[in-house]
Image (cartoon, rainbow, N blue to C red; front, side):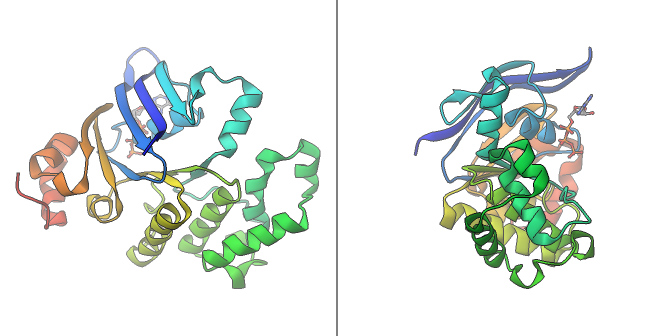
Length: 262
Ligand SMILES: Nc1ncnc2c1ncn2[C@@H]1O[C@H](COP(=O)(O)OP(=O)(O)OP(=O)(O)O)[C@@H](O)[C@H]1O
């Protein structure tokens, strides 16, 4: 399948000394579900942020839908960002607004500033929001304020908002790190369904190796800003885990249990 995203030799340096990404190189096919794993500080969030230019890479190329994201001017960047939805660990909802108002914020990238400020949404947009909220099991909660929701419900609103952009890809930065195991499973099942049945490409940062093994078409392992594993979950060995996590690996191998012997 054709690559939707190509990350070509991307490096990112913060200040004089911090090399957060070093010559990172991989591609992602349309509709693929790819997990990025690695220890704290490995560069996972920086990588996702470079892809939608929340952070500017120091060098390299990021080709999304045949355009180099790093070359885009403000207006083109705004257009391409509507095609790249972002899902955050802490949801980034507006607490005083309702579920449906938060979800409709996904449409703001396509609107004039005035229409956005006035909250002017068409009937079609509202119907689309209802359809997506229904698919995410939120139909009964549409008028509830965001600050009255559970963490798992908030994250589903965050996903609905991202889907209302009509994205081709979702970047999910630790989407289950603040959730209990039950809510985490619901979120991962929704993300998998969005990739498999809606054809939307998913790139997700995860701390949990067992979750990455269960849900991913492919795993990218990062250590100290470098890609040290890029392959199928089926082929991930204890040696690969050791390479990705270094001294933290022993606990993880114990937790993951079923991982293949190298
Ligand atoms: N805005 C910034 N300014 C300076 N250094 C930064 C900045 N953002 C990240 N870093 C540094 O870049 C490196 C990679 O950080 P990043 O947050 O991408 O790692 P991570 O793998 O996502 O970690 P975690 O799993 O803990 O979220 C770290 O050394 C971090 O301190």
